[in-house]
Structure formats: structure tokens, C-alpha cells
Image (cartoon, rainbow, N blue to C red; front, side, top):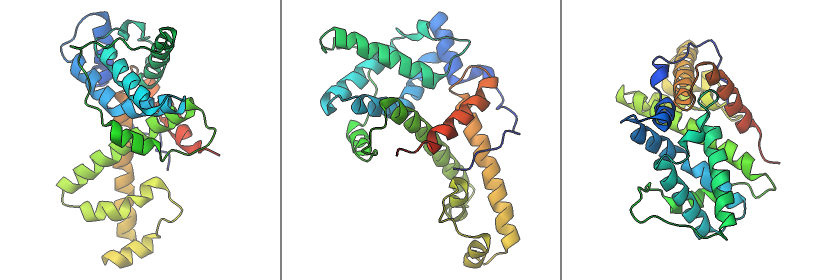
Length: 249
């Protein structure tokens, strides 16, 4: 994956990001915080499920633990423990999950499920199918979590970018050029794409440049939703690409 350059200004409206709303709710109340937290959890539940599965928990137990953790999280039990000065949703989520697992282990593994609690609609069948495709190596549960966090974020960016392009009637162009965003070894040459589309090599280069710029902006905007300070965006960006490059051996 090509690393987006850092010359882009931070996304506007930073103070009203989802994670900022959630943290504010931990100190008081914000009507939008519940929806913001649920949206974050629905996106990033799979990295935690992969973490608990790689930690050795069987399928059914991993499902119960993941669902119960999010049920309690949505009740805001853990929000007061989040550090608003160094808050990153990725880090907060894993630390809170580890503490939750430790408490459940101390209770001899029995979950005290609340019948009336709000629960996320999580596709565990699809999640388990994804987990079975994870590398069968001795890579740690933490590494799996970090890598899945990074890939999940980029998948969201690609889906959003694809939808935006499709609305402008250029889906075919996106499908041809998206390979230039990932830096794959098998990426075609500009000339090959130009010949296939009946355009010029220069036109292809311009289209790729524009797509990369939109991709970079979308990545930064997505990251900004999960941190509390503008200066954290670039650091999370670096961490994201480090997590992707750390391929299991």
C-alpha cells in the first residue's frame, strides 16, 4: 500500500468527530454520542473478534465475549477510563477489551449477560469465515488486532471512494485504476491502461494522481474520526501503514 503523503491539511470539523463525542459523553451527556459509539463499534468489532480467537478462545465463547463486551461498552461503563488527552479509539478499545477478558477469566469464564441490554447486530458467521483465512502462524493476537484494524479502515475508505466514484458515473475507471492505490506488484503500466481504454498515457497519469489525492483525503478523514487531537492523525497514519507492512512470517 502506498503511503499517503503528509502535505494534506487535517480534515475540517475535527472537534466534532465521533470519538470526541463519545469521550464527551463519558464526562457528561451528548445525545449524538450513543450513535457515534455504535457506529465505531460496528466498524471495528472484527479486529477484537480476531484478537480473542487468536488468543485461544473457541468460536462460541469468542462470540459471547465479543458481543457482551460491546453491550457493556454501549452502556458507557468503560468510557470514564478513556484518556481524553491521548485518546485513540483503536488503543482504548483493545485496553478495555483486555480488562474485560481478565475480569471474565477471574469469574471462571461465566458471562453475566443482561437480557435488556442493547446489543450490536454482528455477523459472526462472516467474522469466523474471515478469521479462518488469517495466516496460520505464531503471530500474536495483538498483531492480528492491529493489522485487522488497519485493513478494516482501508476497506471502509475504498468502499466509500468506490461509491463516490460510482455516483459520478466513473465506476469502470475506478475499477481499472484502483490497483495503483495499493502498490501491487502486478499493477499494469500506464501505457497498458491507456491502450485498453483508448486514451493517452498522460490522461491515465492525471486520473491516477487525482484518485490518489482523493484516497489520501479519505484515509485522513477516516482516521480523524477515531482520534481526539489533530496532531494524532499523522501518527495514526504512520501506525496504520506499519501495521499493514508487518506481514506475518
